[in-house]
Length: 375
Image (cartoon, rainbow, N blue to C red):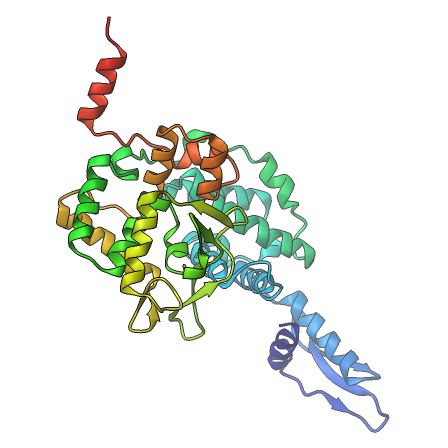
């Protein structure tokens, strides 16, 4: 990367670099206000260094250029995966493409400029606290990198720590319970449909309801992952854009998170589902395969929406099946430590704060309240 930058800067140099009869190397550099000045060094590399330093100090250093350097370096060093690099790039364009600050030399950006940009972006794009987290991550990364390269004196950690953003400045999306989980009656409708319409994809959706696996984990399962009454989660599907801009789907030999490496206890229903699946695909490398190829995550995500439409319920994603599983574990009185392990979370707070919802229909909820509050 550094070699490419050197080459690019030298290509901008309009004057010839030559070696004189005295063995020294010469070139001209532009002078501010017009004209040029002769420079000489003993070696060509030393002279090129002068040229490169000149253009480094006189060219604009834009946020986008620094972002690309920072993100590419993290990818090269293995600090992030390709799909994370793609997400950073998408977020950068989302937040910075229409912002004046993106076209300003970073050496001229002040803390006031940065604060104004952050506040305006939150307001104009109606960012939630979660979405702001993505913006915050990019700003900290870019400006830490810029300070390391001596392009700015802003201490971004201190700046972000001192930045006072009241909670009310963030947009709040009220997520209704019925949008987040399936009710027992809805799960029964889906199960009945699947048992009448047997296919690997349909059985995969049923298994997701019975185990709470992430869809990326589901589509990478192998029969060797089944150990008695346990399902070992050891890998996941990752998606990123290749050099041609098209999506590449790969199996990563580790789950989404460190805690995601887990052994899920299978109930009797899940064990029966796996036996039925094996009848449809007894010899495949992966449990879910079609025409000799692994069935990808998208196939399950598309199919569950179609099933919801067919059985006449609100359309929801595969991730909502995972949240339904977590809700049923908690409602069923499963020990919190076991809930955490089954879900592949780090704490019960994570499960309760993000995966636990009311999965009762209005009628069932009314009955529960009636029974609980009676004098």
